[in-house]
Length: 194
Image (cartoon, rainbow, N blue to C red; front, top):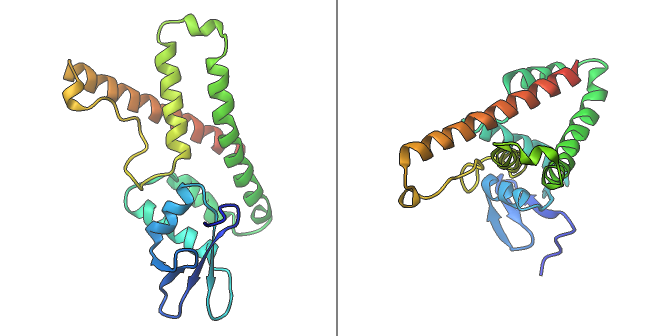
């Protein structure tokens, strides 16, 4: 049985093939992305030199998702990242990004907990729908993009829909609300970056 607390060791051979040392088989970038989405840490090393290649392979996974239209990083953020490789910003940006993602992860559970607690706003019309949309948004942001399909809320199956146009309108409204929340979060991050 594999020890999930230690990083999964992947060795890159001279042929550039990636070898999973736990299962003794070859893996692809998609497999590695799947391990990470499942909560597993990975470490990719060059078999011959022993160099740690993890960072470059993770960047390659991100680049592939971005070019497939599964964009998570807005163009402005990518531009700012390129700019951050010069001067004093280079030392500040990694800490900022790490703390921002940690805040997002911890904020998800805290916000959902706060939304579920006894809150006078809970009696307002539409509050339940807003809470569900926020939960779906946080799930989409933390579950990763790609893999088994979109991480957006998936409404009922077509055969379960009694009023299909109303259900489609509701799904569209939910998606619009999620997009609006994402834009607001991006604006907050942009303000924090200045």
